[in-house]
Length: 236
Image 1: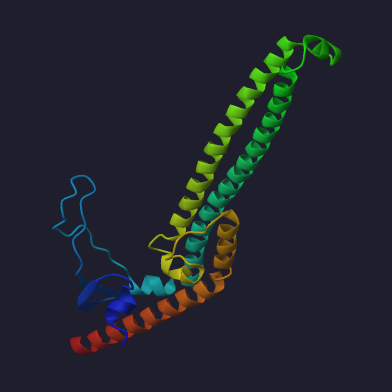
Image 2 (image 1 turned 180 degrees about the vertical axis):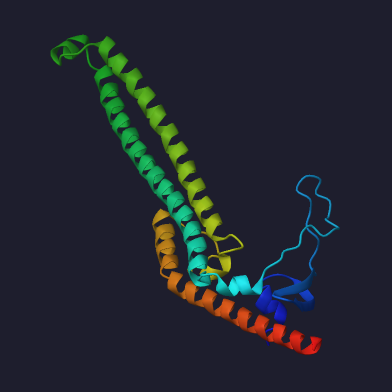
């Protein structure tokens, strides 16, 4: 059975102690039941009330806000960020592949240079080159091979980091429960293609997320109205 806490504060470990109606305001006195939060500076548990919030029922009912659209906007921002990181990962994978091509080319040149080193000076002159030029080419492509290997390592790490960051964005407390079908609570995608496929599937869920958000807000408004009506009845 859905409780008042489930409707007013979904996902939070709270107990509603009192609901009081005063004029056009609904005051909810709620207490946290989980462990206290820690100070971001000293890390000591918090032991005081940090803030209170007032919301006016009449203003909320009159405001032209569509909750489902607002929720979709928030989720879309998360998906946009994940897509941006996915694009970075894809670019770095292409850089990694191009560096692999450069390594193979350098190795082929070095193989030919090694074969040329075994030839006589006369054979080199007849081929239109010299031993000095051959050594210069070897040094040049040794350097290119090393640079390409370093690029492979750099691009590979950058692609992995961007992919992990993209998946971490999806696994935030605000969105992880929305995308369980796409494995948000499991390990991240194995590669960039799988990441982009999952993100596309998440975008297809946005209409459903909008409908759920509107339904939840409607239930909250209905419950708040009934609570206010009961409180007005008691106050008479």
